[in-house]
Length: 100
Image 1 (tube, one colour):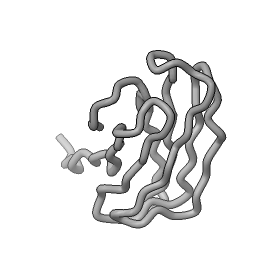
Image 2 (cartoon, helix red, strand yellow):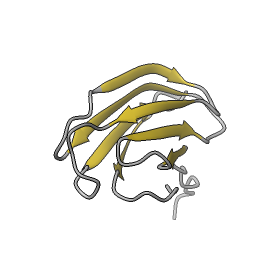
Image 3 (cartoon, one colour):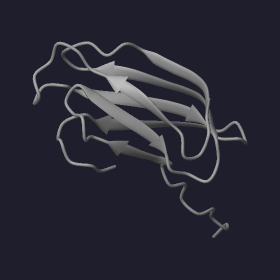
Image 4 (cartoon, one colour):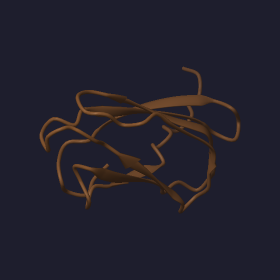
């Protein structure tokens, strides 16, 4: 059996303390992420977001408008690691508790 590489932990934490209208996506990982983009799927409106780089410990705000508290949908997060490998992560916007 060939050697395997350890699983890559999603480097983000979601602060839902201002849900359902605003969320903070925090880079909790040890390395910067590049080409970060967010796409909202669901009711309401979340402007498409893209940033060139998000350093460890930094965050970006996600605003959702025109949707009820239980009807905010999901956001697909896309980024690249420093080695240029690409990742996608689907995160739920529902709920007012802090989580991943």
